[in-house]
Image 1 (cartoon, rainbow, N blue to C red):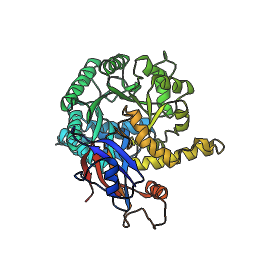
Image 2 (image 1 turned 90 degrees about the vertical axis):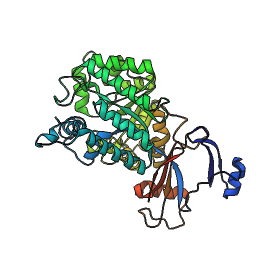
Image 3 (image 1 turned 180 degrees about the horizontal axis):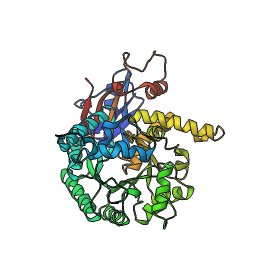
Image 4 (image 1 turned 135 degrees about the horizontal axis):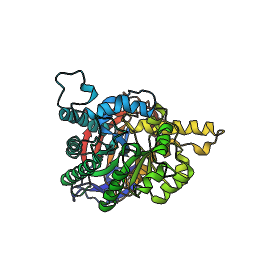
Length: 441
């Protein structure tokens, strides 16, 4: 049994000390030096505390589209993604084409965003790096909800000023508008939480085809001036990679396009990275950027198999993301499973090369400590070390749930069973920064 001492005197819970191999509450309190007046929170006999999951790539406005697919990436974007995202900010969305009285898009945004925050918290996701929409007001709604509901969130208004490669009904009308709206979103989010400790803006050029050279240059300057995080897609799909090569012949790679605009920094989250070349991996490693591995999405959209072990061997930070709704589930635990399965397929295709395997222990690390590195929170999130924030989920393997425990299993085996059979019903309580933000009835 382990125990940690959490100090909440500064208004947010920080782990002050941890001890392991204690046998009871009294000895834990003594070793922690907590005193008898400390509030004691214990997991049930059939449960344990686990670090909160960190979803390093998720699209909040796509939540209603979970499980809807059409062709590969570019087809899916056109049929499902852009219509849904635009419906949260304008009555000109194709989803309202046959409606004589379309609903208030901002009321719709509030409904969707409230649900995605509540659901991801219920799944044990304490931190999420969200793509929002191009609309400032809708993005501000997401930020306000995350702040009030207590989820740690990095929220980005997507930049889409390329007039040729964005839908006519869903784009920034000019580069100047895109940059002005980016600043407006940044300013609002920082006014909500000036410390950036809970909710912070993240500069978000959606992906190279959606942006112009001018906007990418400007966004790189904004991020470097303000030391903000950046997030964007890279090398998710072979047709996307070919399109970028066609659009930017002056650069020798997709990663090279971003680097030419100073978008590859030590605070950059690159979603997917399925089809990166060795040279691109070396460049990303040199810049200190991280990759968000989204295995469920990559499999569902037929995008390919990400070389996680190779990325790690190159010194690249790697975390996990759901990429909802490219991923069919907002559950990070599901992506822990899929990271394992994708790696086993890669191993088989490479003459049964088991050095490519991502075992469940590593997959869990990717969803916590790895993602913490990717979102620039290494040493602050993802574990139970002193100085880390108390972002934690309480897991229960109760007898009426999907995880069947007979009593003779070692704890390592119980955790394995949770990984493969567990779900939302096993998450009893969730804390972010020491604040209880989700509790199962």
